[in-house]
Amino acid sequence: MINVNLRETIEKLHRRRTPSIDLVRKASHGLHRQKGRLGIFPASFNPPTKAHVALIREAMKRFKLDEVLVLLDLQAMDKRMIGASFEDRLKMLKALFKWHSRISIGVSNRGLFLEKIRPLKKLFPSRTAFVFIVGFDTILRVLDKKYYKNRKRSLDRLFESCEFLVANRGNHEREAFEKFFVHPGNGRYKRKVGFFTLPKGFSSISSSLVREKLGESKSVRNLIPSPVLRFIQEKGVYTRRYP
Image (tube, rainbow, N blue to C red):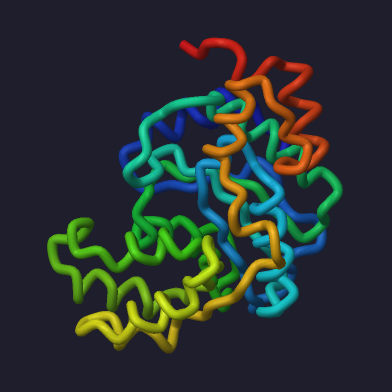
């Protein structure tokens, strides 16, 4: 277990000019040898939901991941800062995964996936296979040319270093996924991208839906895990103002 001051970790990462990832929790039974499969699940977790948990569980089971790094992005792409503070999001993640021996928790100061690779290589064994776990909306952004000066060169570098596992966020996304990788410039990367479907009922759950219901004082018991719900109720998260 890594003992860190969460606020201090976040402030240091914000100030750091180079792409960096800091661990705030290390899996007790994750990668302990020179090679293995590491799932990396970057998101804003505002708050963590049952869909997040289902996605991790399905990815680990179907794709034989030895460990999953749950990664809080301080600079999530195309998202402004709303809702819970980063410190509270990390506290919710730590409460949620307290007893999961194969899950680590980290913080990243970069949103682009390509900028996460070098810090990941510093943290994990040299022969680790990196596997990013994302939703369908995220893989669309990963391949979007607007994020790169030279799209092909950047994506070639990215897919040489990792794979992607894409979970559905709706009922018809398998077909959309197949069509997306038929487009010119996308097909060359399809062999490094897998698709999987979440169990029924989870794909429609989102953090924004949870925040909306909390704002309307409606129950969210069916949307978020009990440790997250307890934290929100005890700390007044999403009902108080943040600086």
